[in-house]
Image 1 (tube, one colour):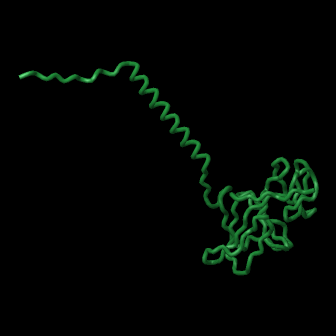
Image 2: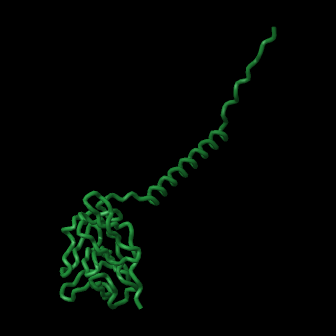
Image 3: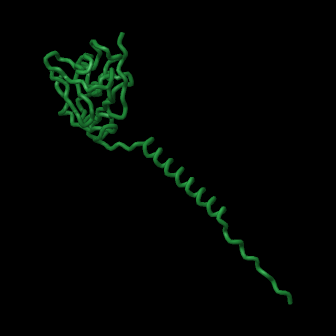
Length: 180
């Protein structure tokens, strides 16, 4: 009877070991980079924080004759015009300054470069290239159904009497109309 010999695998040499380590570290680096890109590319905004949605009672809507209502947590002004309700973004369209409501002049005024806007965010004068940007406003009934919504053009939304709450979507900004 003949003896059979089993060949044992050759031990790993230094070059093979380093190539495996190099491949594993590149894979780990690419996986971490992909995870970081996905984390920042698809942010998750929660209700009640900027970039998300703000659910408000209709009692916070100012009367037509009252000045706009400031909502700093959402970075918007809630304004009630004769045509309906608007949520106006608090950042000037010129260079991104935070403008203020000036009750003496009954308008928004930017302290940085002097742009002026009406109560509905329409451009009056100054270096701003367009009217103020707006957010989507949705009227919601007691069952949670959307019964009114800001049109894509950004006009004010007229809320029906059965509106129980309003939903301001700060993740959907509508650019103001250019002037001139």
